[in-house]
Length: 80
Image 1 (tube, helix red, strand yellow):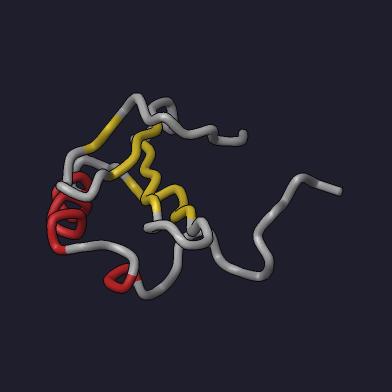
Image 2 (image 1 turned 120 degrees about the vertical axis):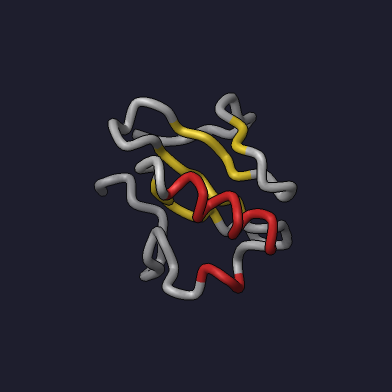
């Protein structure tokens, strides 16, 4: 087993608007101008989706919070 846990879902869905609120979308578009990209959206059952972003070099990972801020020290476990 290769450690993959998704069941046929893409890491970044095509319909971002359904997973992100307005503040997150505005912040995402601002960060995108600096090369940041969505690494994946974690979709836990019965919880809000979590948007995980990475800097252009892939050296910093952060969570795009509901208020549109980027939390570079998130309290989640991210696999390599």
